[in-house]
Amino acid sequence: MPIVYACAASHAPGITAWPDAAPKDQSATVTGAFAEIAAALAATRPDTILILTSEHWANFFLDHASAFCIGRGEGFEGPVEPWLRVEKRTLPGNPQLAARLLDHCYAHGFEPSHSHELKFDHGTMLPLSFLMPSTPCTVVPIFFNTLCPPRPTPRRCLELGRTLRTALDAAPERIAIVATGGLSHDPGEVNHGVIDTEFDARFLDRMTRPSLSELAAYSDTELLAAGAGTLELLAWICLAGIMGAAKSPRVVAYEAVKPWATGIGIIDYGKAA
Image 1 (spheres, rainbow, N blue to C red):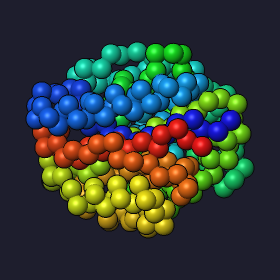
Image 2: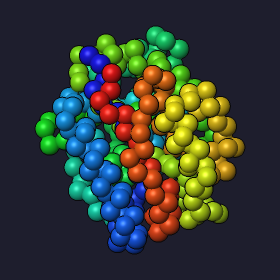
Image 3: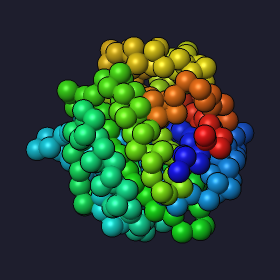
């Protein structure tokens, strides 16, 4: 069954943890954009959300750091942060779909790690707190290593997306895809609070044209120049690989929110085909 919907959104914890810190117009724009894509996603009646997300030392540390990790659990608890102001709950998984994606990857040149036990932090739970439809829906996460080298390259993430597309098209489930992370931010680092709006504009332009070759050509150095957290855009690049050049998303919202120390971007592919 074809993918029914796809989008990407930033997951800055300030969106829910300290919403009043941001200017009211920016906060309203961001929450309004989440409401818009939540309604669009719900209208497609997905059975499962495949969420492309980032690891923040919630599950792994230096004893294990894989390029990609597919969550194949029966359920996922989160958020791990009690201060996020997002209700803690357990989201149901889809271990059957996760296993099929894993087998397909291994048969086509990718060997992601996999786990039956993963917890969700703000990177996953914040967007899902806005986007999970009220109708029953399962979740399959794919985590990207954005924390310690060696990391997967943007080109490798794009190719992973292309590889996943074949398996997703063959799946019986109605699948929505959500990529989360970015845009420019440098959390807890020397440039904390600096937002590179020029980088963000270029990246969004490359996503929305879309220019897959330019997305694949990003280097660690280019991404890190816009902040360590900008590496989370590997998930967006994987989404671009899944969706291909024939489908162009639109920018629903972009705000450089200083109190949240992040360039907040939300894009929507609409009903995917």
